[in-house]
Image 1 (cartoon, rainbow, N blue to C red):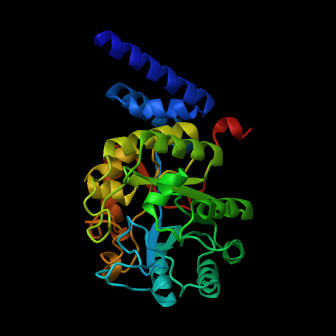
Image 2 (cartoon, helix red, strand yellow):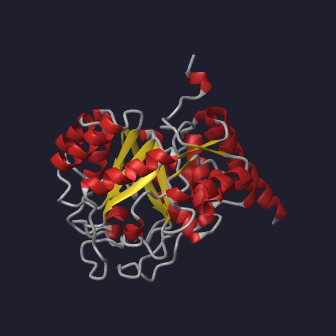
Image 3 (cartoon, rainbow, N blue to C red):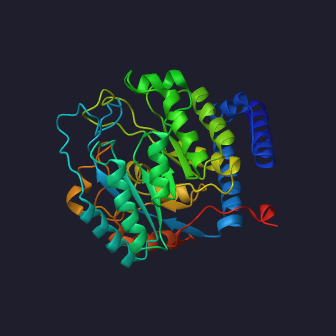
Amino acid sequence: MEQINRHQNQKLSALIDTLEQNQSLTLSEYEELITCRCKEATDILAKRAVSLRQRIYGNSVYIRGLIEISNICRNDCFYCGIRRSSQRCERYRLTAEQILECCEEGYSLGFRTFVLQGGEDAFFTDEVICSILSEIKKRYPDCAVTLSLGERSRNSYQKLFDAGADRYLLRHETADCEHYRKLHPPDMSFHHRMKCLHDLREIGYQTGCGFMVGSPYQTAADLAKDLKFIEDFRPEMCGIGPFIPHRDTPFHDQAAGDVELTCYLLSIIRLIHPPVLLPATTALGTIDPGGREKGILSGANVIMPNLSPVSVRKKYELYDNKICTGDESAQCKSSLSGKMKSIGYEIVTDRGDIKKPESDTA
């Protein structure tokens, strides 16, 4: 048995060496790296991911000011607490004035990136969002704006980009078409989601994708496809976090995802695409009090404290028990900074654009 384990560990170590050298593995190799996960492989991956990240970003952890602008959504995704058919979700929508007030507060706290996130709310037309973007850019020209507002037409994405949006985060959720169908209603299309991501990239956005770890029906083969998609697409940002069920969804009785597997995958993604901006998500902090610190120690380099009005934070409940008071709050930046310092990192509040490795910046 010991010989078998030694042989397996040697094989995993060789796969990690190949991944670090080539930033690529085959689908079957990614699947093997996932299914044969062990403490030794976890430790090697984390060490190399942190080394790579430090080579590019040093010990900086970028923070973004998250503004959750609406929990009204036209979609009915089976895993989401703000899905259209949820009867107990207390709906809200921020006004343009409220959004700008959040930016004002965030700017005074030192934030230089604002993330406007929300459900696919028909109220936020191109005209409305463009007006808000133009005003943010007028007031805070040194700031970047990230949008995370779901699927829109290419023409819409172009208008928002022209109005000043710098980045767009659209989680692909899964890179397997059949798995996608198990997580979404028939009126949603895997191929349209992927088209949106490619449209965003072609328009010129710094583009982010991402997926849930441990979502219902997910297999190691599905996760391998996610990793291969990230390898091929090479996003500027990649947001992954553990699946957490919500009590008012069809998946209410499903088990939550695994923090350790999420961190393992964060390390792998860092080796696949060394300069990627990689958040340690709120979901990690929800499922484990030290989850975000574990994410940073696995290769992540972004945290997104909440700038939303305190009165609505609990209402933007994508999953059960989402942390909505305390250290996830932008106002508690000093506490968050202390936690990062305790593990050897420093909070940075500038725009935090993606950087190229030194070997690429000759």
